Length: 361
Ligand code: GTP
Image (cartoon, rainbow, N blue to C red; front, side):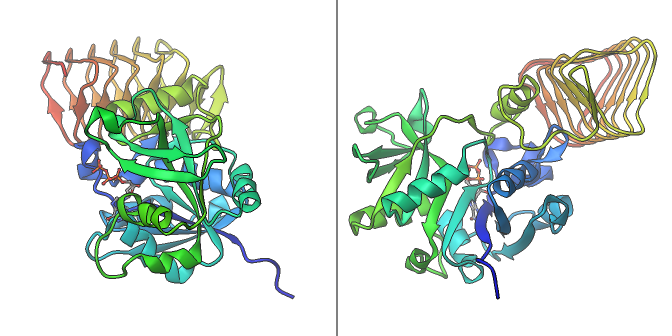
């Protein structure tokens, strides 16, 4: 006899990630590295921890990046399938495009939020309220850049206001946190063949049609990783233990340092925790890495260089005596000897910084 159907999720992973440029010119946002793992690996681990084993990725932009980073995710205990839009269909059309592969109640996630809510509790809430669409909500100090969600005393959705411009429209500080539970039958309301927005069209229409929809507002860590400063801050949160990690960084952990295989650390080099050092990294004499540093696979840090609060992707070359402070460097960046890269600078993959240059944001 067949068991119950697997719990399913659709992850929206097709955006161009314009706010995270120039990093997203070289890699799709859903698979930018966080502590040397593709971002979506954390979302998949969260879903798996709450019993979801069947996930559909709704892709459009740089699909090959996503496939190369995640494959079929078998090692994560998940069946992962890809649906690809020829032309981007927006957040509504992206979910609609996956509709043939899902049934029952499914999770839908934005592929750019780092968060650790109790999704099992969210399902319980959804079921006990008789909800047909439940939206995960978060209170934020400045809700202007997000979608505001107003609820009644019982949690029922009253209004949805996407990125309000006028101050008088800011009627609440609870925002759409980018995870939904949706009764799959409702997906047929989304047009199949034109771009549409789940936030601007689908949700407001459900409210207008009096379909029971609720907001669920737990206490949880939450961060949208969609711009460079948030992308860097999310990793510092993980390193400092402010964000729960459903998945550890690759490598062995010792004294707040994760060190992956095949690295060469000069005896006079110092790694100051917390820090993550990837595979096949070379740390030169008297260099100092950390606190708050993430060093991608195959990166080389020259003698006397300093890397603090900085995120380095794969195969970066840092010259002797260079200083990298609170910045983000894409893959294959070359930093000349004695150069300085300062706070909030973001360098596109492949950038070369000349010797002794100083870069500020
Ligand atoms: P920005 O351009 O920086 O705003 O980023 P974005 O393109 O990712 O847009 P946004 O942050 O609003 O997207 C929210 C989520 O929806 C992200 O996980 C995106 O990957 C996803 N998304 C946005 N547009 C599309 C689309 O046309 N198709 C699909 N499948 N997903 C999308």
